[in-house]
Image (cartoon, rainbow, N blue to C red; front, top):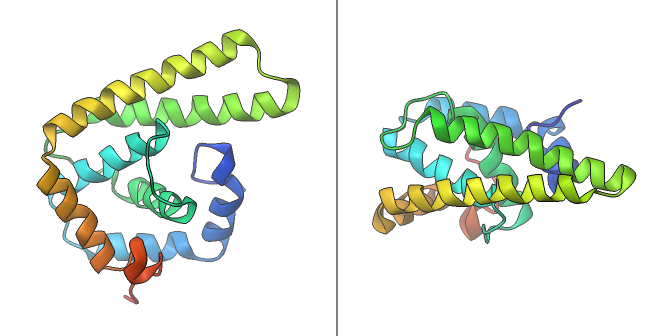
Length: 162
């Protein structure tokens, strides 16, 4: 089974969540919700933050956000578009390949530099996203996720029954 997450430290967790039905639950919850275009942008910005290593969420929350991103990435955002989604896709493939290769054969300097270059591209896109999305909008988005039980102490990653 290929997991939906693109970085090795969370692959085991991702497989457990997907096999345990969490992906189905996220899919159902995401499909039942009316999404504003800016919500899609906020989800994309969180995914960029996860990929550049600056996200402070716990492992399970990062995994849930990754699954949520996979559910909504094909919907239209207000500010961020195809360029951000293509970069995320490339970064997920590149960074997953970099970590898998490092474990198998010891990462070469060129591989490490390429991965760092990818992280810098993600970082730059994240910074752009964060300048486009106001802090109050992002805070409201995260509060909604906490209120809905997707992340945070309110639900500890337990989605509401739909």
